[in-house]
Structure formats: structure tokens, C-alpha cells
Image (tube, rainbow, N blue to C red; front, side, top):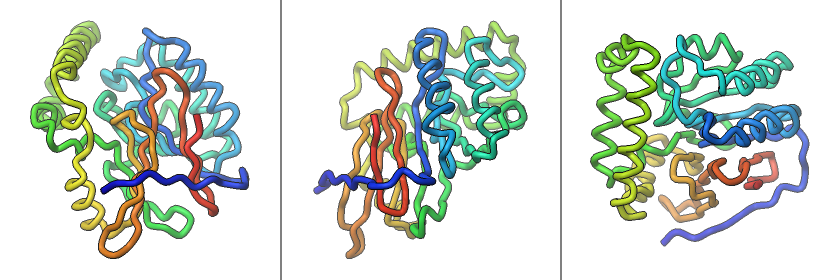
Amino acid sequence: MTTMATTTITTRVSATLFIADIHLGKEQPQISEQFVHFLQNEAASARALYILGDLFEVWIGDDAVQPEHEPALAALKTLTTRNVPVYVMRGNRDFLMADGFEALTGCHLIDDPTTIDLYGKNTLLMHGDTLCTDDVKYQDFRATTRNPAWQTWFLGMTEQERLAFAQKARQESQSQSQQKTAAIMDVSQRAVFEIMRDRNVTHLIHGHTHRPAIHSFEMGGQTAQRIVLGDWYHQSSYLRVGPEGYELVK
């Protein structure tokens, strides 16, 4: 049975920050303002910043940057120019980010999943959507859109055609989500155990589910932790990690 636990950090020096599911888009410009403020303040003194997927509500290709994304891209570039490393993982909304995004921002794209040494602890980073194995329809859609042939076909469309396709796909996703139970759309604990065991880690950080929490559980005779990042639809949310522990900040 999963239990909830939190560890409060007593120092603010040289922490590593994690965020996910910012969903930058023209429908909610206040999110972009909050994100730029976060980059200029909290992230400015960070040891590193990790963005674990869905930075954008939609990213239709590096060759078709939307005007509403430009302030965030510029703020990321300013942050990386000031020698704060920023690592970005593709999510289910912005999986088409590529070399052009890196050139615009100075960020480094990382694979999903990725394992890092986080203050002496091997920690697995994921967006989190691949852990939702009970949502079979979504996993089928994900497999289709990650196919290089599909991506070549999509990027061959005009900008307006891509935007229309993305809008329709988002509407269909929202409609389907209303018909799914919360359990189906959450991560599978079995999938969590399997990948943590295969990667030989006891710590996992991910987003996607929009259910911020720090879960502690037993795994192989050890205490393991799964940290879930919050979304930015209603408030900015991030994870601060230092030598002393973890703190989810809203």
C-alpha cells in the first residue's frame, strides 16, 4: 500500500529544480507570465533545472514556433546564457521538439527515461505517460505519434494544417478523458515497480498525472520514493531537491 511522505529542506543553496506540465499556450497567458517569473527568480540561482515534459500545450515543430511561446523561449535562453543548465524531456504535448528548440533556448533535450546522480542517489526521471499502462487507447496513440514515419508525414503539412490537426486531437483527448476513470489515467504501480527494478533505482521523479505528491513504499527490502510533479494550470508548482531532501513547492 502506498503511503505519503514529505521531507522539508532547511537550506536554499544550490538546489536542483524540477517542473513538468506547464502547458504554455495562448489560452492561458498568465501561465507564460508565471513561468518567465519563475525562470527569472527561483531558477536563476539553481544548480540545474529539469523540465520533465509538456512544457508547451502544443509544439507543432521547430520550424513553426508560435508567437505566444516566444517570451518563454527568450527567458530560457537568458537563463542558460547565465550558465544555469536546463534539461528538457519531451512530453505527450511537445514530443516534436528537436535541434531547433535546443538552438533557440540553449537547453539540452534528454531521453525519457533518463537516470541521473542526484546528490548521491541514482534517480530515474520520466514524463510519466508510459507508466499509465492501463490506458490502452492512449498507449496506442502514443506509439503511432512516436513513429518516425508519422512524424515525417505530420511535419510535411503546412503550419495551419498542423495546428488544426493538433486542435482536433486535443479535443478528442479531452472527450475520451471524460469517459475514463481516474484509476485508468493514473500510473500503474506494477509499471513503476518494473522500471525502477530494471533501472536499479529507488527514486523516481515524473509528471503527467497532475497529482503532486511524494509517495514512499517498500521495494526489494528498501524504502523507495516516487515523486510526482504538479501541473501549472492553476498555480506554479515545482520540486526543490538538495542534499537534505525534497520539497514540493506551490
